[in-house]
Image 1: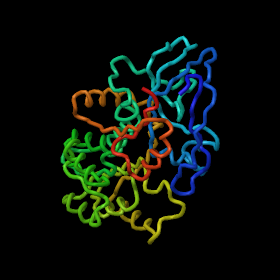
Image 2 (image 1 turned 30 degrees about the vertical axis):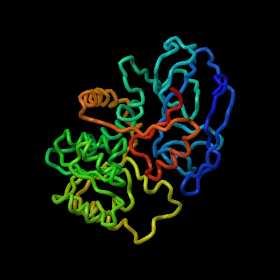
Image 3 (image 1 turned 45 degrees about the vertical axis):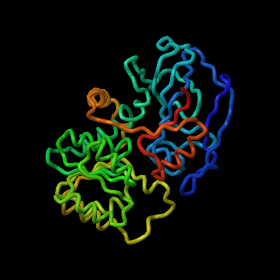
Length: 341
């Protein structure tokens, strides 16, 4: 690409159900130039995450939706290309919110500098970034794992589920993952060390899950919803905890799910089993908790106690199709777009 041009992907239309490539538009505009007090960032890696689907819709949520014609938002790892800011110099490696584009301007607010010892920069978008922090906070603060308890987590090969399960193993829990396909399940047990992993595509999934948790479920880390939660609900123990960070099975819904009203059954189970079910938005917790998370997770990663698989796709232009595949569960590991070397 030309160094005086900036490619960017904007929201061209609001999806009706599952996003399609036509909901995005690749544009080429002049590269921005930093004013006094600003820096020009050259984005290297872009994180693709399920929450972005919610921002494509116009309905109320915890953040404003992306405006039509605006650049799609997302966390990036970038190098400082030009600096007119006293605290940054060209070549500095940083992470922040650089969006789906080659270049971004910043005044330095909410940028985190990645030091020279940060050997794997894209990890700042996964195990050492928002997904890892989401796993850490939800499990330890809401899930409160205790030795000998049973934890179940779906999307177990993904960036949140994989970390949830590995931390739970460090806390001496029995850990059962749920993943889509035999290859992902093998990775979860053989590489990540889970005690078992159930294929959600198995026609006998609910029965297989029941057999895998003979003592019931003490913690269910919820990031999927749908039929997976339907199978989990009757297996929950008294005083079970359910941290809720996402419901990817429902992000493309255009109407209530078919079938009977599930609310009475859910409410009854929460009541009689005295279950704690709590949603959270991880952006609420950066100030008081992120430093402690990063210290703990860096040590676990360095010691090989927490591992992560990345699914890296080359080329900004491939971000829309990669994101559509993410919502279908086609990725294997943390999905990252490599924008530049």
